[in-house]
Length: 302
Image 1 (cartoon, rainbow, N blue to C red):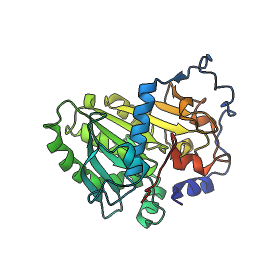
Image 2: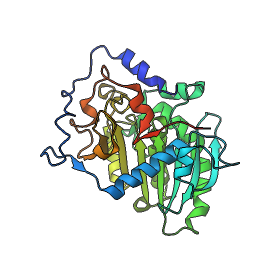
Image 3: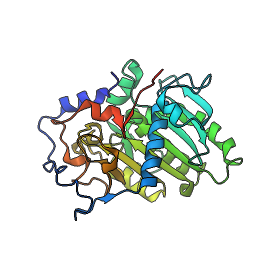
């Protein structure tokens, strides 16, 4: 089973549970309740589901030969694969063009527990400076190092696609570890000027925290749009813990239904809304909540 090893390591490091409000999922089911949570529109949910399928597709490594990976590929059959990558650090994913959503995208999978280097990436959770010229902006060392092994390939693949698709957005998509890589890759390409912030969005599923508050401020000021989807009882969005200096980006979109019903997805104002993923506890979680998002299993079906 693929599941981020840093979940286990982080839990081991915690002597007492993080302070968090009691779960409020039951009381949050009324979309008209005055709790600040905003039900999303049908069109937005469909886009989130499409990109979740692309995150699932990214777990497969045979996409160059055939776009055939079971239900996720069937659901996104219009996609054109530009390039796949599998780096020396076991960072894998693919760059593609999707005429349905009119986007050039890069998709990253979550941790593969059979790849030792993925596991080593996860557990390097000390903070180190990001490439901003500001030493206060810090990110997870393992995530940053992994992103550096693939960003050159991604840059070289995306740049030639910008001219033939001038009206397409550029999206970065990822699940779990891949969510962190999508976040860092998008921000670096914008910061260096390869991409313009108004054309870039990041869609993540079950993302861990990636950096400190200065990083969150930097990302917010960048102009990149972030759509961070989380699940009820998924432990990964609440690690690494805040007491290690980590904070989350906004905006969070939370599947608040215990049965994982996509129709319960709501927008959560703020960076870490206590009514959303932050209401969960590391001592009360469900592994399966991390492995499936919006009804889509995050693994390769072939």
